[in-house]
Image (cartoon, rainbow, N blue to C red; front, side, top):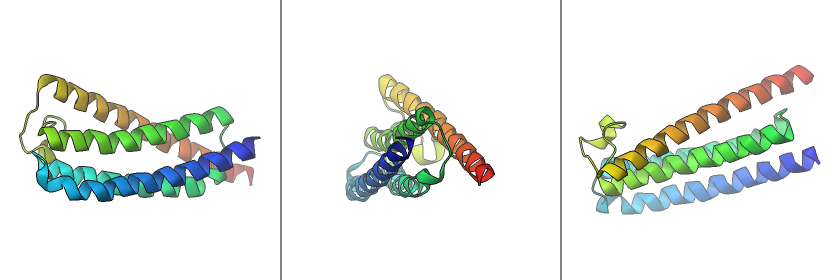
Length: 148
């Protein structure tokens, strides 16, 4: 059962990686119509890089020594973090918002109050999610190599 779950999550991570990679490519086409094209470029690059991250994570997923609960949490956090990264920077690019937490790409543009709040929530969420995933993967690799 545990091996079956691990294999299924591995495959799903790879599939989601390709979906996110494709979204990144498509995002590249809409950069010129954004209020802040620089954040649009950030969104494009985040999706492409996070898509590759998910694919690589899927490739090593079966090597991790994690409990089924940890596997599910790691999987969910990886998807939340990577898709939120793309979506938050995409919205910030269209809205011309987010310069407070992304000063270089934000280009001193400010959105409406609710847009700024949403971007802050998104950036905070993805940061916690991605750091958690990295810690879980490192733990799973450490435990995995110690068992061999």
